[in-house]
Image (cartoon, rainbow, N blue to C red; front, top):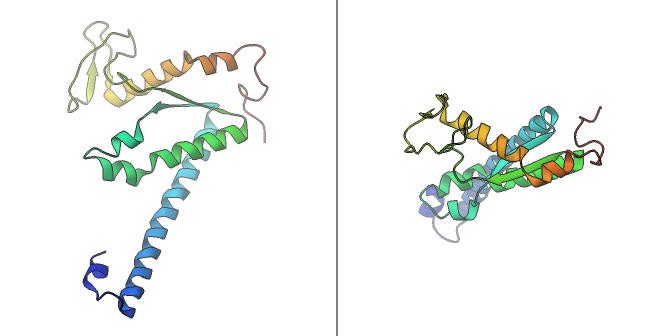
Length: 167
């Protein structure tokens, strides 16, 4: 980027530098896309249902975390995951993200904590675990209660959604 801005506009050197920069960007994008596909395959080969938080990615992209959010490519990953799950006859469930880290996964009570506090200690039930692990359990619990998943778990459910397809 720096070399492009320092080179003279319209020169052959600038065109060559732009081409090099474009190939570097493509290489990073291809690596990210490959990681997304491999991660989606790994999750879908291990689990029948994958639950995730429904995040406002466009809203997060307008914060001071914008570069990190956009660089990770969350939207692309979720679309790849949903497409691959649909093709395999599996299910992805998006759950409401609010309060997943604040609510206790054991008793359901709200335990307010600041972002720098990385450990969840519930004064009501004594549950003590990592904040992210607590949030993951809350996401799983919300996905189990999700109407889409409840419909899939009825006896009239579509074959291949509950049981893993054999290869």
